Image (tube, rainbow, N blue to C red; front, side, top):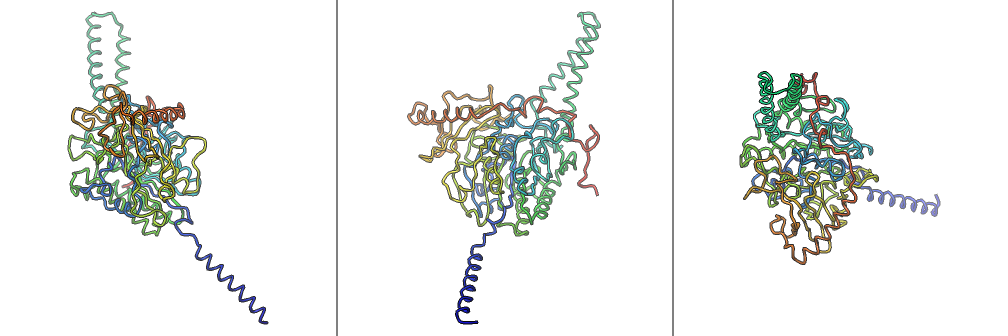
Amino acid sequence: MRWGENRTHRCYMAILAFLLLVLGLCEPNEATSQKPNILLFMADDLGIGEIGCYGNYTIRTPNIDRLALEGVKLTQHISAASVCSPSRSAFLTGRYPIRTGMNGHDNGGKRVLLWNAASGGLPTNETTFAKVLKEQGYSTGIIGKWHLGVNCNSMDYFCHHPLNHGFDFFYGIPFTLVNECEPSRPGEIAVEYKKKLWFDAQVFFITVLTLIANKKWKLIDITWTVIVIFALSGTLFFMYWFIAFAFQPYWNCLFMRNLEIVEQPMDLKTKSGQIIKEAKAFINRNEDKPFLLFVSFLHIHTPHYTTKEFRGRSKHDLYGDNIEEMDWMIGQILESIDHNNLKNNTLIYFTSDHGAYLEGMEGSPHLKGSNGIYRGGKGMGGLEGGIRVPGILRWPGRLPANTVIDKLTSLMDIFPTVTNLGGGMPPKDRIVDGKDLMPLLEGHVLNSGHEFMFHYCAGHLHAVRWHQTSSETIWKVHYISPKFPEGAGACYGLKLCPCSGEKVIYHVPPLLYNLSSDPSEKNPLPSDSELYSKVLPTIQKAIARHNATLHKVPQQLYGLNNAWKPWLQPCCGTFPFCWCNKENDP
């Protein structure tokens, strides 16, 4: 080879080496080159004042605290509703419950689904983040609580079931955990209605006897046909409700694997272990492809069922034991993420569906929740304690560690956040109220994009908050709030605070708080102050704009949509003989 050719050859080799070096240095990071796995943890009825990293020093939550230490903690994370079904529908769709018909009804306490055999539920035309991610090639699973309906028209239609809303896999309870699921506990479903029914049944029985006696002694002119029809109609009515309520553990307390019922009624003693086992199995079988796993805990909803290994371990009786067991479960599931080397490519999120339940159960001071410094709790419309919840996100290499963000965010933000991360797009044919959190979490913007938030109790607008970016102030106006017994901070004696009627306060003029300086909502601004007159009109205009975006939709939790319908009852036998335990059957 001549000298010139040799020099040219060496130049080519040098350029090739340089390009290979550049390509090697520019190789994308694992956390950004692949679609991330998404692991969502949601507690049930957990208060923001019950976790170590949010200021609790008496309940041990080391695994949740570790997520906060290794990720981002949100301190103004707001639920779209203060009760289960509406909050969860908003979480999955990124839309206010009032847009989807999932806002509930105050009449008769029907603010959540009350039956597996109700025909109401998350509408089939709504788009969940699971549905979008499934279209992007994700394996999607939900383990635990659903509480967004099962069937519409027949027992095997499954129109509201998780598998019809984008999930490939479901292992859990289609309803919610309630006292009726543990025989030793007093019932909690429709307690006041049951009392009224019992009274009405006695009046009916006495009336029938009176009619028969008067007819026999010819004191009134009425035919036997009228008496028989009246007696038969009333008997059928009361028998319907007796069967509905007497067998609630069979109707509502069941566990499913996909579309199959595997336990009816479910065995609470095995649930914690089975949820961990199924979550680990889901992660293991999807370690080589992107997955979305939503672990929706039964903890810490009443009856606070806790396995014997955790009973008596906390300083707060069964309530604290239940929280510490849930934290342990989170740690067990995180071990599978670490074991499969998925930590750096998995976005993990932890929250609660709404605030803690303050009324408690059985009158025990140890079986009531805590929302820290925030007033109110579960079911209390716009009061801060019912809707301000924990929000923790961890993604090593993508999100900063040990970071606190004190900006306005919402559970509804998870919909656009994970949708965009998975390569999908939120639907364009409807309003999505959530905002993509990634720009805020990564420090690219100063605020989430939420200027106003609207806080409903059933269909009633109780409160509105405004993030005034010019002064970085959070204002909150209350139009309606619960009427507590004198000296109390909750609606003791009731299951939930009402949303309207005689047991609420209609504020005229509205109450205005500066949450930035008064997060406990103790000191409303004087209504004759100059600041009040400037802030309130801005919020009133925002309400008018918001109302203009609302349209009439079928109400999923009203009337007959939320009544027990025997022909829709999920049953693992031949109705009404519904019982089985396939999980423990060799």
